[in-house]
Image 1 (cartoon, rainbow, N blue to C red):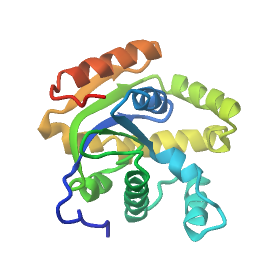
Image 2: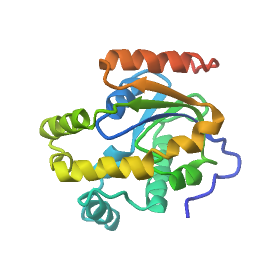
Image 3: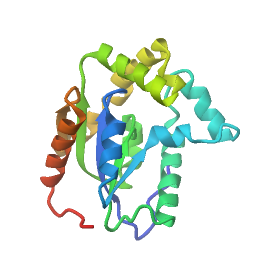
Image 4: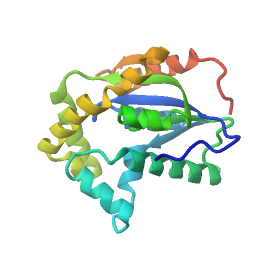
Length: 209
């Protein structure tokens, strides 16, 4: 089971960047994380940085090499421990910072496990119906960043199918809260960022540097 929220700790003010693999979540999350008082957490990058000689690293490698998701409790535990380390190191100050999540939660179970830990204030859904365009983006990224898990088209298509069947329903979890802003991910990245910033400005009560 995922750890419960410690006594006295408020849920983190959170923005979710949501979309299929190749939709530009990482690009937008990284850009937003460069703004003071916004801290970006990319679940995929944390997993890829794991020491594959450890038990956790071996488990991740086994699942990712098949294009499958890491078990939910393990994923949320890793997320929670990493956030705690960020707080301890002073890289994330929950009382004044927004947490920007990219790649997590990946399914409804993860959303449920994390619900008491985060106060989601906006979900930015980056859409790109043209799956061939997403595949091309992922292959290009694989060559640029040496991300071998993105180079195999069969694995890519399996990841996209997993997104449609397991990850996309997360939107239904947050839909009743009226938090979702749909953004066309085929626009230039700067246009996508403009829409994200507009959505943040609508929140009011923003943190100051």
